[in-house]
Length: 230
Image 1 (cartoon, rainbow, N blue to C red):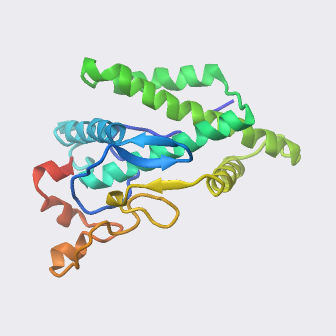
Image 2 (cartoon, rainbow, N blue to C red):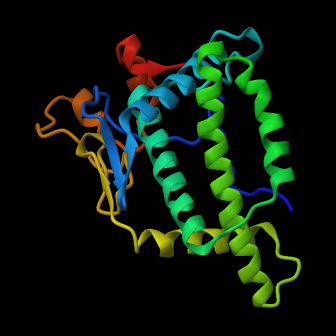
Image 3 (cartoon, one colour):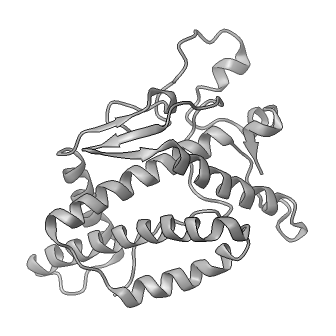
């Protein structure tokens, strides 16, 4: 069994959502059913990701390949990852889903090279969060595999698997209330980074650019150092 659609955290080049830069407040970033996603976890993963992007930007071997992004983009992406992880966890509990422990061990062994680059004081927490994400994805994968087998697809291709997982997650998400802190700019479905979190009207061209779903690197470069990574 192979793990599919695993989220790669703290590596340069991760797919990120866009959100204009601003500091966040409040201890709860999102409520997923009767559980919460702490702002502290979002900020922690954001710091891990930005540290990795900053290292990549300063690595001569990666010159030209390092990605510069707004901190708020990373923050939105990490929140979405944690919300989906919580949804996967709740689905796994409801369906009593299992997962392939050998696959999880192999994935975490590969992640070790990333883990070795973070400060020692952060490693246990980082590993625990990432392992939870991977475990949930593997559990949903096991359900997708069962469904595909029941449909007579003994040897599904990657597209079949991805579509099955997406369908399972989308269907389950509709059954669970997801309430995201407005400061993360969620849309009606609770996906962070999809709406403008500001209550003010954008007037300048710079302010208007901040509301783009895909801000240009030239705009990101103009942000203060503490609001961009890489």
